[in-house]
Amino acid sequence: MERDQRIKTLILGAAGRDFHNFNCFFRGNARYEVVAFTATQIPRIEGRTFPASIAGSLYPEGIPIVVESQMEEVIAKHDVRLTVHSYSDVTYEHVMHLSARATAAGSDFMLLGTKSTMIPSKKPVLAVTAVRTGCGKSQTSRWICQFIRDAGKKIVAIRHPMPYGNLAKQAVQRFATMADMDHHQCTIEEREEYEKHVEEGGIIYAGVDYQAILKEAEKEADIILWDGGNNDMPFVKPDLWIALADPFRVGHESSSYPGEANIRGSDVILIGKANVAAKEDMKQVTDNCRALNSRALIFPFNSILTVDKPELIKGKRVLCVEDGPTLTHGQMKFGAAMQAAKEGGAKELVDPRPFLVGSIKDTFAKYPNVGTLLPAMGYWDEQVKDLEATINATECDTVMIGTPFDLQRLMKINKPVTIVKYTYQDMPGQKGLSDVLKEFMAKHL
Image (cartoon, rainbow, N blue to C red; front, side, top):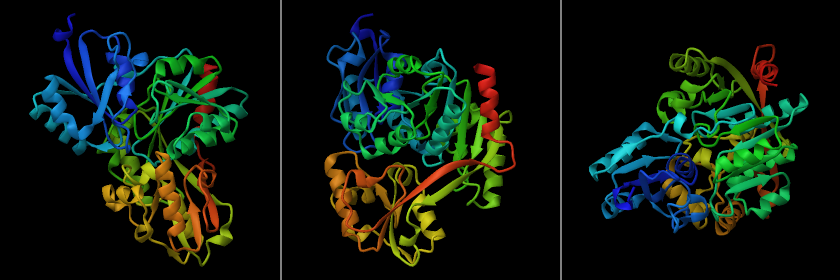
């Protein structure tokens, strides 16, 4: 097909699902010409080029990545006839606003489904997904990995992408040591997800090209774990699909994209934080999930908090530093550090907003509902320094780090620090995920 006959296409993304959709559906597909990707959610990921080394022979110069606000300009300039929404952890309202912008500009609007984007594996696959960011995927994924390892099997995790640097170099990334984090110049967000797997003896893959990533992971695994990010659907076709819902965000299971798809497609639904959530909220989320998916097994689970230095909390004025994406586009109003501060008898949660420095000010301007918590933003070196300066300027007695990654590895904090950890726990005395995993291994191994 001649180039001028191909369907001009624009892919809306956030450096993850967008690249995967391209690789699975558009790469090598002569019916379409992808003229650009757009970028949003993550700061400073536009202005790059999706490399020709990954894009394939139809794109010898690669594909430009522009900011999402330029969508209408790109549609007009290239006579784009198809706009493809390809990022997650957003409301239906957000998706349809984008649809209105695209269709008003003259383009069709498209969402790709599971059959077009899930890669089949030669190995048994477990997938952990969620309704929203911050439901407890990471702790659940790590608990599953340890459970499988304790059973004598080798499990390799494949993590949802976070390629915020050189895309050609990040095509396939393998993390098995802490030195691998430095080698790949990981951001704070990446370290939050990768380092705990490695600390606990696991191996985790990520990157840009998940067809190539899966082939590498299969070489060293008995079982593949898809460790989902945001609330995206699995990139690898699961034999057991697990989805998490959050009793602190009742209703999001049917109002977020593609969170509802995860609930509808899953085999097991886990309702987290049962030890701290209100019973009526647990019941309502359970009922909502059951209405969307009558065939899935539904289990509650506990999220157990531990603090390494509880003496630094009681009676103290504390600054709570929490997971960045959970507080920002995840719209969560509290995190592990805040919960531990309340349980530990903190005198006061210190508001960091009077002390914000540089790009951290921009984060609060974009997400004003974050409130008195400090999101651990660190997508580039200067932002890490801004976060460090903000923490050190904040007038408090104790810094409570509620992220999965110890920030002290990247910065020097001038106040006493306590680390908050949270782990998955099946409800004592009840059937739960451990029973499901035993059945899974018996069937597939």
